[in-house]
Length: 466
Image 1 (cartoon, rainbow, N blue to C red):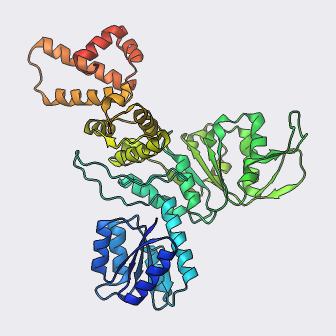
Image 2 (image 1 turned 90 degrees about the vertical axis):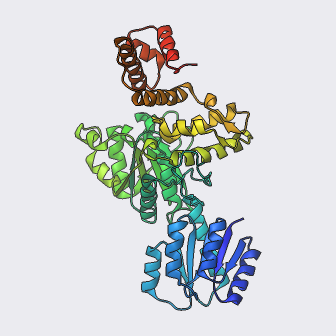
């Protein structure tokens, strides 16, 4: 049940709104002053605040600023007794979802509230207290939306990403999403779609990396029955399926030059023809593309059309790797743990301190996708209340121990005798190579020119193997 806080110093209005919203399946609290409202917000999370602009101890603008500063994932709607366009624009810029003037009409209020909450859900705007930098502090859990898979973090990189999504979502711009593999480009594309005017229309995702030249035309544009050998039925292409909504093209850099030319015509003319048909179909599709390649370099090498690139690049978002998102890693981990518990019917409550420290030091080459898979595997293996280090893949737990050993080495005094100096140099060389090959022991042994057994023994000597 969604929670709403009504802030109005006119008690009768508060009572009327409360009864109306309770009848419409909301959990409602009422406050008659700004001070009491902030006390309510400090105690529990509210999806939405309905705040009167004129209050005895403050006004709606000041309340909006305070709420957005302390509880940025709570929606705010301002109610006022007079209409002022300049004030409405200012409040929207400050973060209010909407601005309603009295007299209040039930249908209008309910419609505005539902839309506001839908927007909050789509962006995963859940109660998220500040994450303490104290190592022993547990990361807060964040509501996970199964519809869009998007998790908003608290780091500067995450806040910047969320701001860009909020900025471009209401427009019709084509968007290029760039970033390393596994950073969550499709989830960002879904978040953009769900916060756009097209949110009730289809979101269609297409993996361009798996397309062959022969199949691409049919997948994009569809075909008529009998249009070529093997066309046993009429097929609707991805552009037509996404008509009115959003088409997400993943790994667009893998498309052949011929298909890029056909795409350019479609994007320019906003029309398609199924293969084997003479009928043109009008298109109203927003296009979001994703790539982990540098398309600028691909253009210089003649692998990607510059004119198509500029058609797509009306707005671009670069997704940060997981290693640059600080303690957001623990937010993601707790989120994925909740999902894994639901999938597997488990009730694992969290992570040991050793595991949390390991998550924060590991470099996550597979980014969010790798973390999600690690959590699912660990949840399956865990039979206690907390996930322990032994449930993690060996390369991750070994990485953590290597970090600890390296830190210990750097803190200790440098050895004074040649034997210890040689041992330390050997251990540092082993650690360096292991890191370079992401703790693949076969590759490390080959680079170090020793057999695997010798490498295991040397790793065991410095507590890298148990």
